[in-house]
Image 1 (tube, helix red, strand yellow):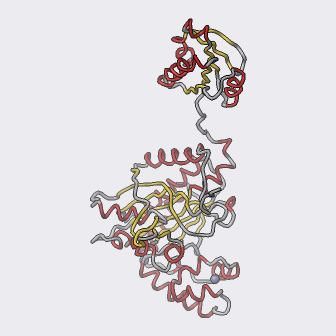
Image 2 (tube, rainbow, N blue to C red):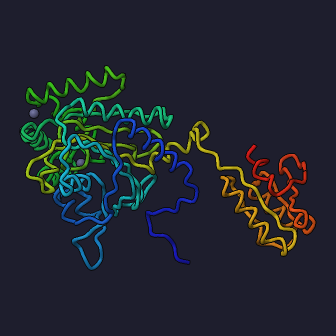
Image 3 (cartoon, rainbow, N blue to C red):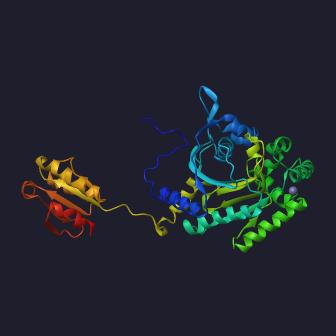
Length: 414
Ligand SMILES: [Zn+2]
Ligand SMILES: [Zn+2]
């Protein structure tokens, strides 16, 4: 047997997935976001430049195309969206767009984490207003609480300041790490010299405790402009009745974030507890090739994680019901053509129908009709064929009646 690739999955019932995507699209369009589609194949260079060569994603998790390492399967869609903005010469800003689809990362698969996974990626390109960050966060909060009826999650936010703030902060942080060099793990010792902010992503409990309680906090090292913006962001969220927790160690894994960063987390997801993350990014548009930078804000929602969370509350969700199905049963092979014509006629009028053509015995066809959950069995034998009629059996009540074939549509539409 040929098995599927590790870390991928087959979706055999996509009712819940479609519900998530449809609700998300509807809500984003209400906020005047347009849907775009960007390629799954992108130049590897795009992610090297945007995410940074030191990130785990670029160093270890990229799927490079065999025979052409300059092309890869996208690991995320923000850089692609920025590329699309530049390459298509978009002039009107803010450019409010979203896209959704599969992303690829060669990670160790675990609960809620796949190598081929799906994300909804939301971007506002070309906005300096911190109020826009508050609006994106409020939009996501509304999507999760109202559109997806999800009530057990928390919003974590932090403010990383501008480039200058971070450079000054890194000096402070390095001093701190050097005085605690014997307490931190080996990986953090390396991070200290290569990608110092990443120490906050350390999974080691002892390190996490040390950073949470004693490390300097970037929100205490903001310049006056950033400090005002940080205040404004918190005030706006309070005004919009969004509850949040400030998490000073939240830095997010990617290089391009500035100022606002946030994560929505759920206790129901185990170690991989974030199901949505995002923030403000500057320089990305310039990095991918524009002459001028466009400050931006965006977020990505992990669809598989949402699926895990919503599976538990599925019964409360207004999931669409599949349409009632009618089973058309030709009693003998000679009635198959008319049965198929009747089915066609019903389908033409928007009534779901299936002709039972796999068997020659009435009994087994009735069993099949039952198995597919048919609302009615529409039986056509030699007598019905001659009289242009059909016997209609209600599969729930067992009631039977004869109808003209021309009356079927009207009867079933009732
Ligand atoms: Zn600043
Ligand atoms: Zn560590």
